[in-house]
Image (tube, rainbow, N blue to C red; front, side, top):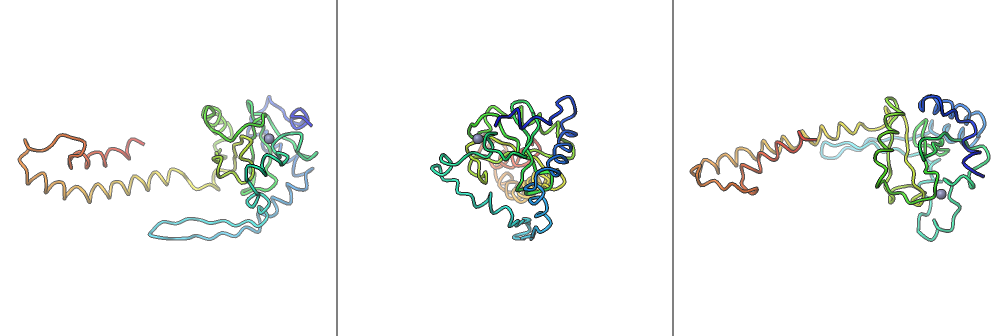
Amino acid sequence: MSWERILQIDRPGELLRQRIDDLFAQQRATWPTLRDGEAALAHLQRKTLTEGGRSVIVQMNPARRHSTLANTDAKVIAARACFLCPENMPPEERGIAFENLVLLPNPFPILPLHCTIADRKHCPQQLCGRIATFLQLAQEIGPDMAALYNGPLCGASAPDHFHLQAAPRRRYPDPRSAFRNFRQRSRRSACKLRPQHARRARAQPPAMLPLTSNAPSMRCNRSKRQPTSR
Ligand SMILES: [Zn+2]
């Protein structure tokens, strides 16, 4: 089987976001594995764990056992038929083209409308040299969907075939909140340091203050500047 068969329902002249909706509609109608996988999302179990004022949402989906418990030892990966290569895909599976990648519905989804976006060639999961493609993809599927990259050691079961992923943005944790929290923590740290440094500075005549990166006043200033540059 070839990418030509996988891409036979694609309409490249239309917007990528519209083509994603059309692809999922066609695949839900013709591919029972995808229907079952999406139906399993109704049985998700979620729990919020809080420690030290920080919270993490943990999600458990028994239907993803197939992916998350897959053996990714190098020998096993080398011996298995890669499910992101078209010759090993089930006859119902279809996709749509994006540059040198093919966007496919994930039949074992973490979220609704969960896409796996595979390279047309069987090549390692390395982001190097692909940032521009990644950003272009994020722009074209937005604003209601977001793209993500799993590193080669955290891919559930395909560390040997490059792929990105995408899903509805509202279902992701907002990465901007992580930056906001980082900025707030840094400001609090700077505030705690400042009185101590001020006392040291007052204890020495201004001419004696060392002008090195280790100077207390310099550390204090850097703590303030770093977060705002992000
Ligand atoms: Zn492959």
